[in-house]
Image (cartoon, rainbow, N blue to C red; front, side, top):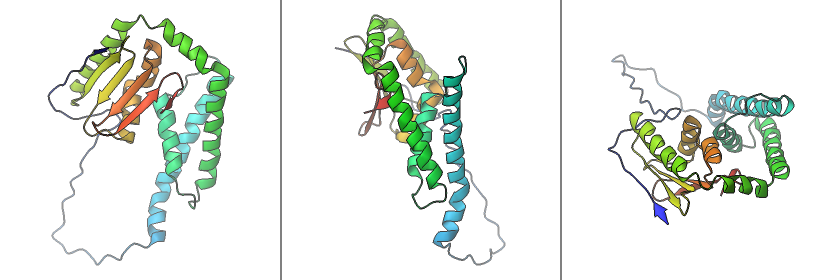
Length: 220
């Protein structure tokens, strides 16, 4: 079993994951006394964020519908799809947006069942098998992705493994689920993994691991 992994000097940046620290200078004029926020106040503050999550998920589903109805329409990126799904799941059931979020989640689950029914895991497996000899293409993708992330200021261990280099591993010390989705979106990693014949993509911080199963089009 081959394994290739390279480490670059530390720098940090992810397209879509840029963490900007906003430093706000405090005024020398004493601020008026602040009242403690009530739960209702907090909920109101979160309302715009929840609304944005729901609208983003609705846009992803609309794009899926448009692509199904009209050939040539661009499909949304898989990472955008999973990010929208994670957003919907994070909405509290008691929130005003919860009913619509629930309907959108149900539509996503139906879409996933249709995907498996229409294409079938066996068919996807066969396609990935046909790309098994593309070892150099997969190794080159890992190298190019590592260099791309390095140019963006992000130090990652990115390599391939398994008998035919069909496992793509991405290690980053601050990896978490939002980082996984944003990283995949910025590099179109899920789409490229499918096109190059990778069978799985492993994201890890060295302790926790998120594994994307290419044939099943889902996380294990």
